[in-house]
Image 1 (tube, rainbow, N blue to C red):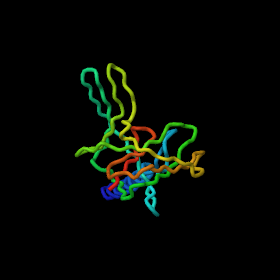
Image 2 (image 1 turned 135 degrees about the horizontal axis):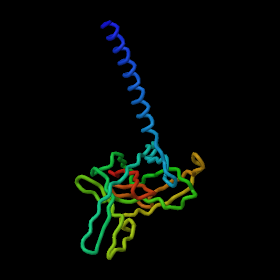
Image 3 (image 1 turned 30 degrees about the horizontal axis):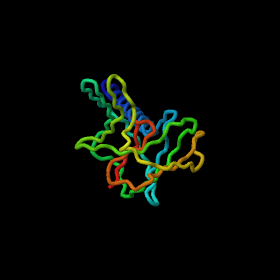
Image 4 (image 1 turned 135 degrees about the vertical axis):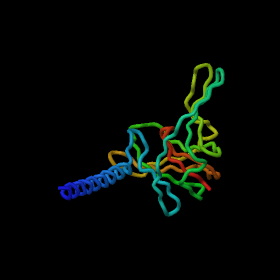
Length: 184
C-alpha cells in the first residue's frame, strides 16, 4: 500500500513538473511577442551600415515637480545608458505604422544623470500645462515611405538631417514609449 502511494505521488509530481515546464515555456514565448497599440510604431529597426538590429521599446516612469505656481513633468528611463549602442552618427531607422494616425514620430536627446535618462515632457504655470518636448532636445529628421508593411501598415525610413553627437537618444511616437539607443 505504501509503495503504491509513493509511486502514485511520484507519477503526479512528474506530471505536475512537466505541466509547469510547459506553462513556463508558453508564458515566455507569449512575453517575447510584441503587442502594439493602434498608432504605435512597430517592428523598429536600427540600420547601422550593412546590419539591422531589432529595437525594443521601453516605457517611462513619471516624475514631477511643483514649486508654487510652476510645474514640470519628466519621463524617466532607468540607467545612464541605453543597452543598444551605435558608432554611426547618422543612424537610419525603419519601422511600420498605420498611416491613418497622423501623430509625428520624434527623435530626441535625453538629459543624462548618473542613474537615469530623462526628458521633460510638460511645463506650466498657474495651472496651465503644455505637453511638449523642449525644442533644443528635438532632432530634425527626414521621413520617407519605403513600402507596404504588415496588417495594412506602411513601412518608413527616418534619418537625422545632421550627424548626432555622442549621447543618449529616443525614437518615439508616443512620448512615454521609447525606442532608446546611444551614440558612442
